[in-house]
Image (tube, rainbow, N blue to C red):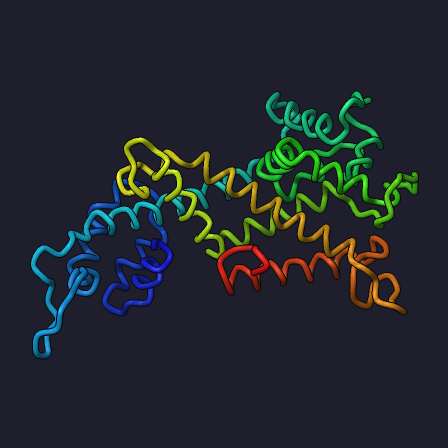
Length: 307
């Protein structure tokens, strides 16, 4: 409902001013005035049921009051705007080895990806075993900041079997050290950081708005005082939105890994052709193809499901 509501406002010539505020406002204090601005113009069209009398359409006696629904939609849009700002702030927060929380999350990432294998040292070539490029992962997190760190740690913790399976599937790790898998190696952790960056870009382009609105509606419906999110403060559901972001990152990562492991077309060589990755030289091509697929699915149906 919220996605259709947002589209109806931003596509309305009469609501250009309200549309600008709706697209950028982030606080609950802005909801009441915005709701009234929209209802002054749109109430006759939004109110249902309607009947036609001559050349006029008028609300039937006893028709529902649409203001609570409009207020819920506006609140969901503004809370999602606030969440996008929070994502940007997290991405802009650089990894800091002097922050115990950052160091602890990094150590947990290793523990989840290499269960039973003690971390040899804070810095070293062992980080290549889970797909970092340098001896200090802090340098690889520059493009994703704290947001990437938290996303990778969540994936390794909450989808550990899947994440570890990705590493196990690779035929070799950095430096050519053999493993038991048969899929060509790619820098797993660095790929995840890049995926986080791309998913945040999808959020900035509002391609994930449907995900945020569905998450907020579900959080409201699950609350003892909520009814489809209508009476629950959506700003209190930022934690649920963060988990939804992590889940999208995980879905994109799994999709990319699946393409990477796809069959190579006969006669193709590293760096060209179609199919999956033969070597790390194929990484840009396969990654690009995965992101095209992700955007196409989101634009066509608002989700990453195949159908």
